[in-house]
Length: 307
Image (cartoon, rainbow, N blue to C red; front, side, top):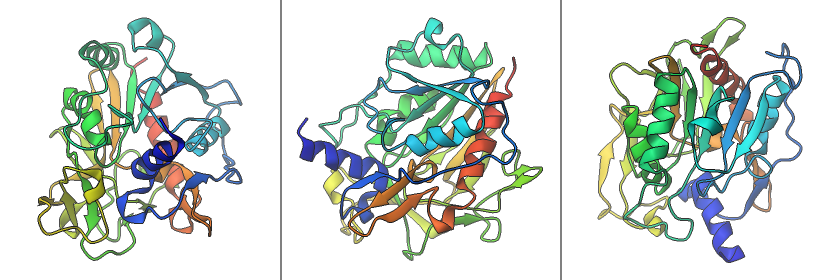
């Protein structure tokens, strides 16, 4: 892949189509200090971070802030670059996949599934029977389409499109606005989440037994383009779309002995600097002061599945 093509991929899969103006880089100055770490440093549960399925956002690169927050809480993180097997999952408590993509070169439809049927069944068995936990983070097309079969195995119907507020306002999800719910990951004693910041992504229909964290609702439309180049601030009237009503962009699910969290936007759990003005995006943004705590609350919940 050429360097220009790689930069384009990183733009689309993290920043969102309407905001791509210049290259983004990890905010290396972002720091997070856990007031009361869940574990002693390096003594926490093992979290495997997928690096073997065309994942452009690595723990050493644009998703480094995700790792720093969890390591500050005592968790151990390791990149998992091999095919998913029962043996490779055996020592882990949580498997994280972020913006896995079927093809880094071909971004337009049709989108293939990046995980094999065998890997999907292995993950499902590990969660349902053995008490493992899956944290599936995806984004707008083609990311959502690439992991749709994996999500479907757990009952989540991902929309392979991109979500956009009708009024173009800042994407704040809050209890006051009614698009952030009270649940086991937002109502943690001493770590209550009232508001989080999102940057586009997509939506999904959760299974009936899932608990929705955040929902799109009537303020949103989800566009269904065929080509990535069709994703813009001003979408052509010929691009099909659906209402955001009934769609979630964050939800959790108890699945047998294990647990699942699906989030349909990759930006809230990173920390980026975008463009020549180094605009902040992610947990480093002034509107996202509770995003890091939400990440910790989610991982704590995933970590406490059946042992």
